[in-house]
Image 1: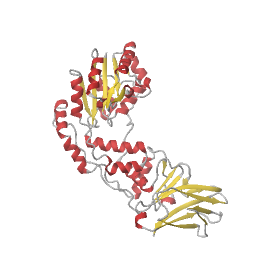
Image 2: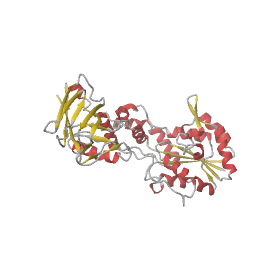
Image 3: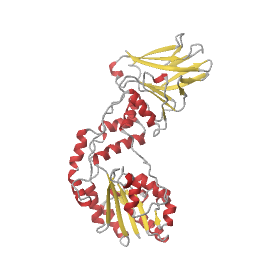
Image 4: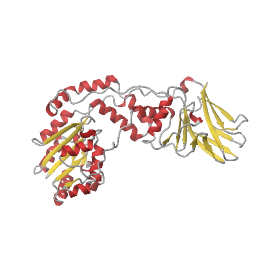
Length: 424
């Protein structure tokens, strides 16, 4: 039986490949191909790995179980896929070789340029955490010591463990893949027809873009995180962006220089050219308020707790986010009869160091609805000018601490049109 080991690397389309194999497992079985990961909880084969004394190893008993199932089904091919396989220790691979000694082994390995990989990994972490505070810590240099994978060194270990086995190395780059599609590319490399399969060619588990990272950083500056339900965060100023880099240009080139020797060695063996990668320039730039709001509309597709609506006066002059739980339309935030509560975080994150007082004013669509506003222990009635203003000492409160605003209306149909913030 032929055993295809898809060993990674992470951030190289592994999820798309695994999802396609998972969704087509029954059809593949009819063709004599076993992909058993879905029968063991996950869509990939990470369940056969464990960490032992700080090393990742493959559990050979679980591997034998996979082989027995595939043999019992008279499969011609067994596919094992897990992006963590490429970090398995040499000691463990030598044991795996003994288990697979009577089988034909093909190793398929996708790689990407190391600096590009590090940036993608950082953006992926920001997306999955969905907390801009985490994003900030990452983008400000939390991973500056990480140089990416030494692909030549990793492949040397696999080559020594499986001498004579076919090793297919592919660059994860649209121009290098079959039809620019990593899923189709994998099937071609494995020598398996993908005709009739439900090919999951859409990009899955993608990293967020640099622009989305800017939006997340802005969220962090305003103190808004995913778990804030029904909250409005208000900021201000023309230039909202500021996340001008992921890893610095200097660090990008440090990564490239440190990996240059191993990449040359890798390329000469597997690609017959000087270098395997085309070095990309790292995206840079800051974005003004209008651009960040546009980005957030796109980001909402990835971060479902963010809802940004066009035309709201609540954010015509200021940065605003409205999470699910409140109605925001062209008139503003709709208020119902009785008690309305909004959780707000407001602030320029350096304001507390530069100013003494915070002024926050609420403007409503009408003053005839008997509206009263309670915030920071102060309670005021909306004036005939349809507004109410509060002043708070910044030495007594933090602008990043969430504050509950209670708005009581004697009748329905009113709107919170605007929230104005200033410092003294």
